[in-house]
Length: 114
Length: 111
Image (cartoon, rainbow over all chains, first blue to last red; front, side, top):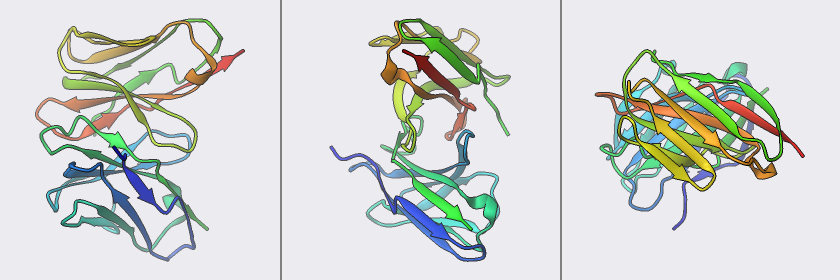
């Protein structure tokens, strides 16, 4: 069974640009979660999508947004990039919103903002 | 927001030693999970705990869900070089659905 996949692996942008990160959940999983992990820090919850709807968002500004597609894959968009947005962005999936505690992570996208 | 206090922040041990780390909170959790993250990769789920007092093992790893529902510990016995990495606890708050993560414990093993 394939795990959670994310693309791209690395992304380099300049300040003010927009970044788009993609995630494909484990087959059969309907919930997708996005986390930000700044260097040397823990995971900060960003967004949660289930069945195409945003279910919850963390304490991040509105320039962090995303969506979930009918096939349950997801995009995270970060507008007006700032230097402090440089981090590893992790996507996780769970079977559904009831089993949201059972999250499986992808390898992450390393975003560097210069 | 809700926080988990994970300790220690880092550990430097000799190969073969046992390791213990824990997470505490002022809030009640209905699920505790322990993850391991290798450099440049996403966290991998090691153990999931669903009931207060539950003690679960996964090979050399043992974790327990505290009776008060506010804490959990992870033990690693007879550490080996591949145990190196960052260990995160995570909890699902009672009545909530998102996970809250601890700050991580960085484990370094001297051969």
